[in-house]
Length: 108
Image (tube, rainbow, N blue to C red; front, side, top):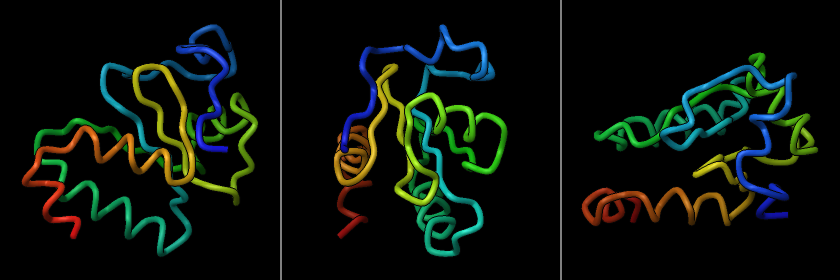
């Protein structure tokens, strides 16, 4: 289930989803899971140009987006880019595509 959005920006028409800055990608992660939080922290450190916003799935925005896209909280993280939502490895590939070559080299 890599791309979960039926159409771009569908969350904008959902009154249950709080408004958020969607001019940058949004990475929604499990803030309780140590591995997930550690991964998000790692991404935050290497996102020197602040191309991505981060929020936990336990917050109001994260919960609303998971419900909107029908993603189970224990299933995966959620990455929203240009109004489209991704999970699983496709999300990581979309995220990495926005990194500079130097940032990508640090992933290895």
